[in-house]
Length: 200
Image (cartoon, rainbow, N blue to C red; front, side, top):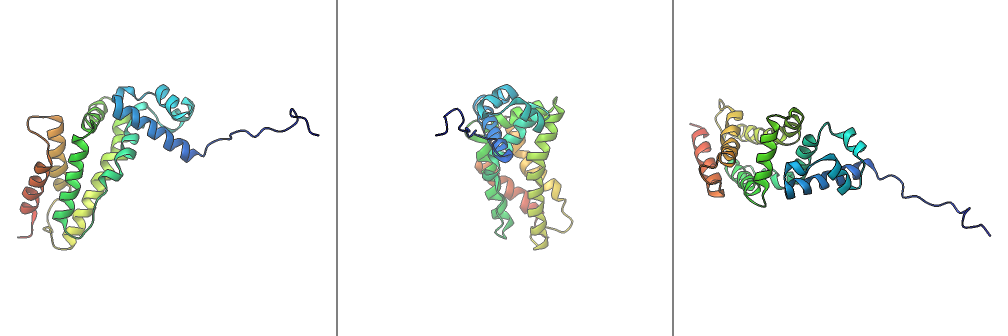
């Protein structure tokens, strides 16, 4: 009979890289949303995710860059862009969802912290743009392009400025809280912007 000592033991083996990455992003998002951006350190994220700091250093140039990607992974489904063929309805739905994200569960404070830290952390700034703001902007521009092709917007309208007017106004109320950021405000923004952009 084979002795116990001679019986090969089966190790746990390495987790697939995609699984490890997803675990790290979840752990970083939990720390970010629970305690703010200063809580997102490689030490704490690695411990929470059951990963090694070396893995994190291999995938992210800084903890700020990790925080930015973690926030995008957390918020991506909440900010899906509808496409019903009615640009007013689609933009209103998306902008209201954006306002809800900014005003519930402390997420607005997290975004404000990411934006603030991005001013002095170039790696965070690049990651925030690459993983969050640039993809969101591209989706909005694409929606406006379809609306323009359908004749719902003027041919000569600057689509980038439309994005700035709508989402930029929400960021302004988040960062400069002189007036409340509400879903009613989002609806009014869409009305103001699209009524001005409608075909003559």
